[in-house]
Length: 303
Image (cartoon, rainbow, N blue to C red; front, side, top):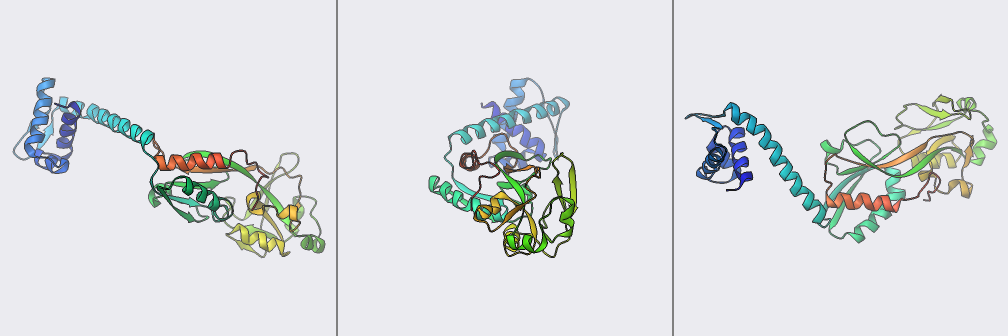
């Protein structure tokens, strides 16, 4: 008789507190469960269960065996999952959370290429600049930009971007060009409200010292593209990543302010729930994105 089936029947009896409920849980007859457990006890030469008319409880030996048997069954299930993950073609629905501007400007066409390559996969892409709770909200993956918080999530780096201070020629002609970080405080600053630093910008000077500039301009928004357009029409200075700016500086619609500032690169990551074996559909998408963005540096973004 199959050892794993014996273990499974025994564990289910302990979990359910009896043979009748265990049989119902396993979808087999009560006599089949009883035969599995009896065969297990005979093979081991030990009584694993105390049986009464009202309840079944594990003996001391049975309780110790229960703990080890659970580990064995978990390992067997993991081995099955490994084989499935290695052999199964990517198929099914992926639900992913993506920042709005990155999704629109950089990811939408890439997702199209992926779907053409994997016709059995469908993607539900939710565009939202708020951090999604992957497990509780049912997401398979999210794109995160910037420093990653400590968590149990797994992550793969896709590329890097860089934040730049920018403004229009008209704004700078009318208001002057700031020469130091401190001078920013006297300018109209267009602020992205979802920054982890709240209502301040964290900037680094030439000598490596960190400066926090409190942002109190006339426009605050939770969308980077809207801040880019506001800067282009002369409303103020904004701090924006290069994947949003695209070729705006090359075209001359925006001018970089304080270009000597040493701003840290922004990592762009695919994050996903932990697990030893990743679903084929998710593994295929992440591998595709890693390859698609391979070699893209902080300034290598075009819209």
